[in-house]
Length: 383
Image 1 (cartoon, rainbow, N blue to C red):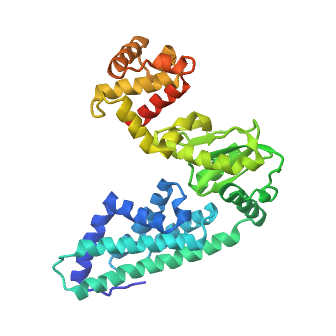
Image 2: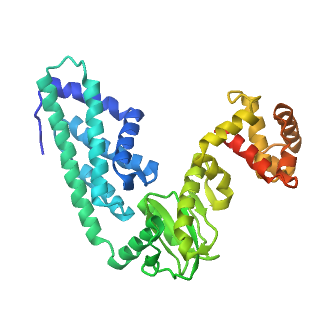
Image 3: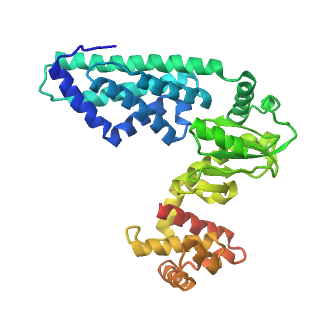
């Protein structure tokens, strides 16, 4: 559909702004923030998944406008449909999807208006061009709604009901729906959460990971697997992170899920990939939950180290690794890919600067609290 409303001066000015915005990562960050603020279910999705979705939508609208008013192409419509289908599969409601979309639409128009300030073009021409641009956004919204409704209608009824029950159990603590989710109320289960938000990748991973007697699906945009004790196996993509909780009674699955989500975010911030036990990331979760404590510990314990000094960072990284490996020199050296003598030298310098003997902190009797204090301080300082 053609919508040539504005004159060429208005379109040219707006085209320059739109093309500049397409290449500006800050614009994407602002629109993503607006969508996540306006919609709780969208905010619960992995941030990179929301970025992928919004970047595609911004690209569709801007490409339609830049293409001289020829309207949304079939390719653009199909792209919007795929994104709407993803949200339906992820369990995001149509209302929540539109809340995020409209907030992003408003944020985009505000950015455009700010960038057009001072443009040497009559306001009427600019206004007409903006109307044309926003009409493409309205057309895209209609495409999203239609595709979402079609996807929701086609989802398998029994599987959809089971997944809805699983989401209710894990997110809202509705343990009375355990049976509807395919879980035994007196069972003992592992809860595992992965950062595979893409529905296609998630389905493949779920098929690999879900054992007999387990259930899986996308919960708040993350792949979640609930498996009987000792029966979680399979593989993920190389760059994915899977956090697994110890086996717990079914009634504690909501607690395990929330902690896995926190650990997943903490692990991702630290570049972790592969499999990780929930308890492995306990210090990281605690440090992220109470960042002020980490800052105070760093001020008190690491005052002689400068975060901007590369050599000091090496000392701190080595001390942290030494604590993580129970004060074992050889294990620390292997983890850091350096010689044991290098580790010894760095630990000696760290002790001279801070007074911390990491070997004693990690292995000494009654030193658990001291080890946690130093590790927490290092966790914050290194970040």
